[in-house]
Image (cartoon, rainbow, N blue to C red; front, side, top):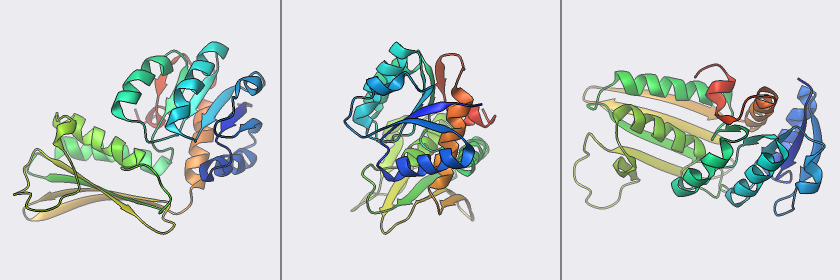
Length: 243
């Protein structure tokens, strides 16, 4: 589908990768907007907003998409649970793809993590480990947060079960906790491992990204898919037919 996008946050690493992906995929970048600049004057010439900027920009972009009747792809991470709870009702009024990771491989990891969480009982201890470059500002990553959501959903646990790292005399691990560990260093694009450990065996699912172009291509693919869809909040599982 021939579409034109408004790219918010175009100067960032992901913004530049999206511009390159659009060039490769024959998609027009109708407007490039920097963080903190009002995109209102540029939106009318575009079909879909793609945002990789700051969580602070999300509400304004959703409100703009609602007023102008535009679709939106949100790739920005770092929203708190409270922020997302307030934003989702707005997002549901427009065609919106909101995902923590746009990689095809990572979305397969989501599906496999759900299946493994369903099959492996509580005697398999679940831990999520992620590593990113030293410049990443939020922790855990949006991808790790989604993996944790999936595990909690399948195990019927709430966010109180999460253990963000461990320090000191923590006592023995319980079978109702889910560990999450964030590593930062160098120029790592994104590594994620979901580990299920029982007495006698360990099962691991791992995805490693070496080029952020995979996320950019996925975001552009999501923009092509969501253009013209009915209002609602979708994710990459919907885009890829994995839902």
